[in-house]
Length: 302
Picture 1 (cartoon, helix red, strand yellow):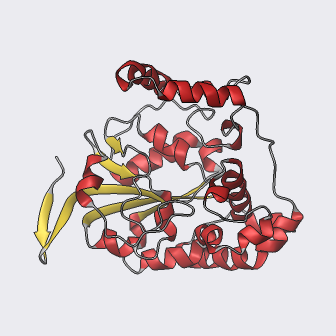
Picture 2 (cartoon, rainbow, N blue to C red):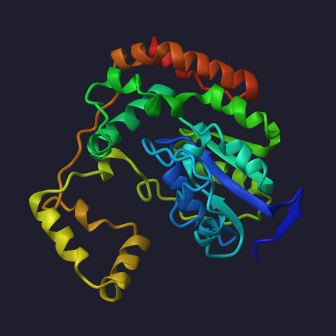
């Protein structure tokens, strides 16, 4: 049961509540899915409720007050609740909203080398069609970087400074996203300690539950037809099939006949040059505020 109390005339959540607040394209999809294996952690469904922050994703912004009743409906299970709305990190009002609502919040932030993260985020917006859908001309990296909706999620230091105005540093657990691949067992164990949980044996499969480019395959004409037909099937019939596929992390639309592969692209020297000044300043500020070691991120620009 979610415990509540009244303090200063407002309703508050008394239990420990975890927030995986950042950053996009930094392994958070895999991390949230893996943590959901632990019966003592209740990950929100969907993974990103996008209720508390004004940032509802890469492009959408809304100043509406949080619908707390709707928010509660996204959690169904026992254990510490975990909200993985990663765009909350860059939202200017999220720290204050959480401060006034939750008695014992814990924050998990996964940072990725910033230029690689920006490049991956940009490519995802293009490959998925999200940029076009939101009338954003992100066809060129430089023009996309000038859009604050891309730039804001890489303001590591400035965003962290806002969170530390409301919460002490011991409320945060920082991850270098590269550690999710090189030492996932240790990271998960440290996270359990941070959340005050006993040890759980996780099924660690780095190829599943990720949001990599290889899993974003554009639909073929046949794939679009199959999706349309499947959408017409009653939920009572397709529901059990969908749940089985989700449990096994299988996407039938990744079949070659239904979709095509996305080219695996990496940032080049020009991309580092475009971002250099801003990301250097932000990484330096993050390190100054938190002591976070960036493991030679900036040397990659030379």
